[in-house]
Length: 113
Length: 114
Image 1: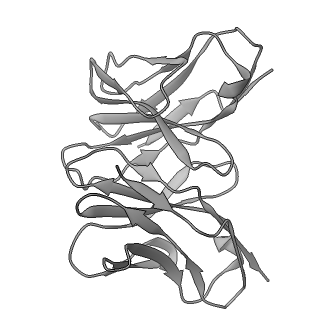
Image 2: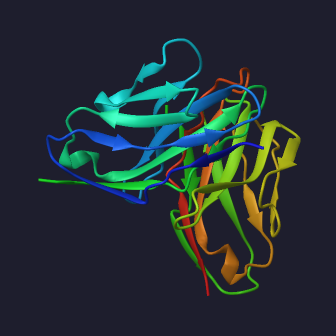
């Protein structure tokens, strides 16, 4: 069975500082990993995904994520956070050969001016 | 290209009432999904469909039904609403040809059962 853990319910950073949102996963085989962002009263928007190849994945809005197989992690990062990055972030995993996604509980990011 | 659309945006039901949440996509995606989102719980898969006429249960199907008569539409039916079904419901779709495909989400329906 596949699962995702987001160990932090909330992350607070000052604008201009680096932002990291943590995610660890558990799958039987090789994973496909995804990050989504949800702004208030909106649906989930796709940010980026890891399929294979380079462990550093670049996505929308200046976000990137690093796949670390030995630590089974896929942390989301942004070098310089903006107030507009304040939102709920979800990590999700899919096992190869499956079409269903398993989501983490989400991390609320607040960027203060 | 509207993507994934959902109606209604908000709804209040009384216990025992029924309703249908509508979902449509115009991306010619084969796969469609229904999730519910509860605070602190992430998203849980209710039902999914791999094509017209084919549906299957997800993690939390009890109390819900679905149908898929066309590629575009995937309605979710609540027959006897219960307070435990108070949640935000998201529909999603993906091309489905490859397991690397991205799922794209609709704006959600916020349902309250009183």
